[in-house]
Amino acid sequence: MTQNKNKVAIISTSLGSGGAERFASLLSFMMEKLNIEVHNIIINDVVDYEYAGKLMNLGIGTSGSFFKKIKKGFLLNNYLKENEINLIIDNRPRNNLTREIITKWIYGKRKKWYMVHSYNTDTYFPKSIFVSKLLYQNAEKIICVSQAIEEMIKYKFDLKNTLTIHNPYDFSKIEIKKEMPISEQFIMYFGRFDEKVKNFSLMLEAFYLSKIYLQGYKLLLMGDGPDLGIIQENIKRLQMDDFVIIYPFNKNPFQYVQQADFTILTSHHEGFPLSIVESLALGTPVISVDCKSGPNELIKDGFNGLLVENNNPHSFASAMKQFVEDTNLYDFCKKNASKSVEHLSLETITKQWKSILC
Image (cartoon, rainbow, N blue to C red; front, side, top):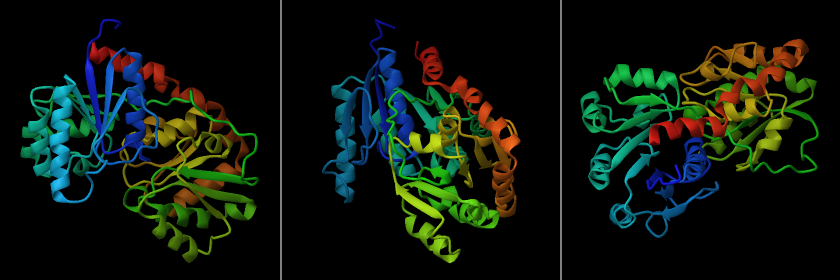
């Protein structure tokens, strides 16, 4: 790869607090390791994660009005031309048909790879199956982060240019502090505060029903997003103020994850959740609902965590209680956690990207 002259643009909504944004950060480092010139292009002015290569921030001075959004299009078009970009990896949500038609014109004849991070296709494809196929059938690649997503896209849109590459983990920049601010035992969720996707109502109700807080356990919620107020209202409604801790987004949450007894996920739908990957890699088992998609490609029930029927707070509460009370089961899952995701290391996933870039 030493003679590789590829110039790759990774286009994302931002480099902020979401899983897709975290992936964009990791992808930039994978591209750099492959001796590729990396250009990170973000639509909104939010940069939390580190990145490799250059950054073009279209959000500076262009947020707000319709005319400023048009300006972003001109800036993107000029940037791609001036930097002679020959491959675009589109990491954005793509659910606005008019915008995507304009974007496709801006991309021109360059190679185009489209990322799909969620089983909810409304986030990445127009509602019309005919239009979706028309827009994406000539793309060089549609890269799905889970096998379930790829199979669904093939079936729903009859697209033949799909493949699966899972999300990796990378702990090369973990910051370890000497003291933890939480002295009690705790379980944890870390990610975006988005009720429509993450289903915090289920999470908090299950925690309430489990009664494990009476055994000294706290629930730590770490992140940010539009629905912090909804979460706080549910905590008050359940009278759980003394047992639920909310911390802001932390780009390096891994010490907390490592210290947690287990992490939890109650989403309506996912893609290939980095929170599960990173938790298991750190040796922390996970309890997750069996939603589409990702959890059942990562968690082997009773081996490295527990998979629970979705939208069933009583079942999720029982799983939490089981992990607390059945120490043999918990210890077994904890022992198996890190080795169960060794195949998702940054080094291994980088090799998969190399195989399609060369």
